[in-house]
Structures are given as structure tokens and as C-alpha cells.
Length: 176
Length: 109
Image (cartoon, rainbow over all chains, first blue to last red):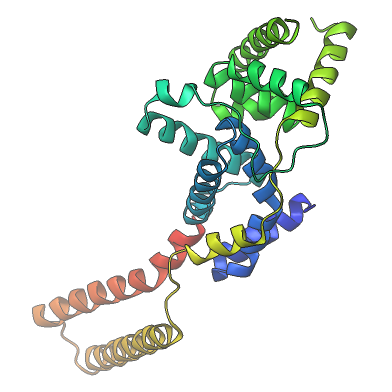
């Protein structure tokens, strides 16, 4: 895992000498967590998740000069990816995207009973898009509330209420 | 306020999601695909042409500035024509320097 200093060094190399190798290293570092986040956000659509992740990396590259280093590169990248996802949802009509079912093809799912997997999929499907985003960032990506605010642009109160509502909904589905 | 029970539920829910939700495998082709889609870099030849053009422009400007100073020093009267020439040369110098400096400055900003 890259340290913050290493990350900043790689970014500096990208900005000053347009180093593709340095950017490749950043992509290598962040591709798996970002694709995991997007895969679960898209309800298991791995093609769509990879498309959004690719666009996010390309946008990050073209606006790397505007990266101020106030947050970690990962937080900034997730924010770009989330915005890209939101604009994709808008483009593809939100109501159709909300109905996505969770698929697990071509992915590595830890060994767990398929019943539990289906329950979790149903619980995730019961959440609204912002609730699902917040749940994934908090529980799957282990991001603190402050970083979730930075990524989604929601105020911390909204993040907390999304989390609380999501927990109630998930508990209801899981306890059935 | 968060209680121990909340913390326990959060921890269990986190574990459950991590155990059941899919995680994509690391894909070496993903990085390659991203890098292939990056905008083209200027070629080495075009960088040389730019560098030579910049050097030539600076040399021409240096020559004319020196010439102007020698002319002004040799004659005691400054004419309107000379002032106009100074202004023109100043404007050309500023635009050449801006053309050289601005792309580098905007890259850092």
C-alpha cells in the first residue's frame, strides 16, 4: 500500500513530467477497491462498474493539476467516481437503474452460504441509491463519516441519517 | 450517542457485507486499458521543434533589444519612432515570454 508521501510523489511526477508509469502505479493501487465499490453500487454489473471506474481514472488524470492534496488521492478519486456514477444514473434514468439485481458473475465472492448472500442482496436492493452509497463506503470501504461527506458531498448529518435509515431497512429485510 | 450495542451491530454488519458482497479480482488489463485511453503525449520531434522555436525567438528578441539600446545610447535624442519601436518590442517580448511560461504555470496551478 502506498503511503501519502509516495502518492504525492507519484502525482508530482504525473503533473510535472507527464509520467504514465507513475499514473499506472496509482491505477494499480486503487483499481481493486474502486471497482469493488462501483461493482456493489451498480448492483453487480461488472461491465458498468469497470466503465465508470475507467472514466473516473481518466478524469482524475486530466484534472490531476487541480488536486490540492488536502485529502488522500483515494478520497478524491472516489469522489470523481461517485460523481461519474451519479451522472451515469441520470443518463440511464434512475428508476431503471434502481431495479438492478445483484449478480456475482466473474467476481470473487468469499465462501458463504448462498442464502446469506441472497439476503444481503435483497437488503442492499431495498436501499435507495444514496443509502447504498453511504453503506458501501462506511461498511465495505471502512471510510469515516468525514471522508464519506467529502466523497458524496452530503453534510455529515445527512450521512448519519442515511446510515441509520439504511440499518433499519437492512435489519427489517435480514430478520425476515 | 453511539452505544456499545451500535458498535457491535456496525461491526457485525460490516463483517456480513464484506463476507457476502462480491469483490472483483485485481485485473492487470484494467490498468493497461486506462493507460491506453490517456490523451497522447506530444512527440519527441514536436518537443524539439518547440524548444528550437523558443530559442530562436529569444535570440531574435535579444538581438533587437541590444540593437535598440546601442542606437539609443549613440544618439542623444529619443524620437517618437524609437518609442514606438520600444513599445512594439516590449509587447512582442511579453507575448513570447507568456507563451513560454504560461503552459508550464498552468500545469502546476
